[in-house]
Length: 174
Image (tube, rainbow, N blue to C red; front, top):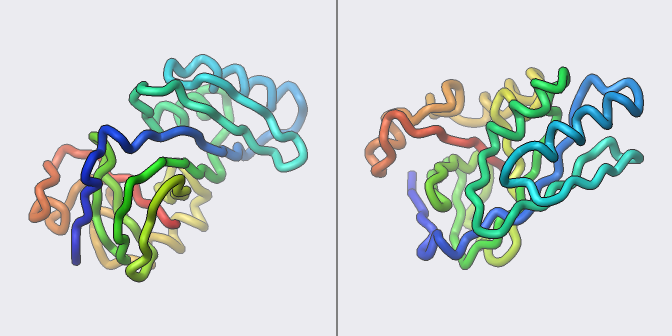
């Protein structure tokens, strides 16, 4: 197993996300989610794509992005996140399956990849419990033998790479 840290993580900026919410039944539901997402302090703009039942978010430049806060906003509006993809502009990383890496102060576990070279705008799909359906989470959790996938917290596989036990680990696919 390898760890790949982004060399200049300050230069790696989360720029946007696309989010799908589940449980929406009408335009008032959609508006409630949109309003909740607009209240999140680091969100600059929310555009609703009604056809795809998707919310396209732009983040304020330089602000710290908190994916759990986005999920909480949707849940507090009475719905759940069904899918979330985030875009980050990376300098260059070589990504391997089950690699752990950081972007800024956030830790990630890549569940798929095979020596792929990532550069420029890169989309990660977050596959933790609060970002996908239970069925999809089970599928992704089975794809890795590492315990951090099931708990969402740093496990032995991560601490030997310098992550602290209290750290939040996001599990992603590309």
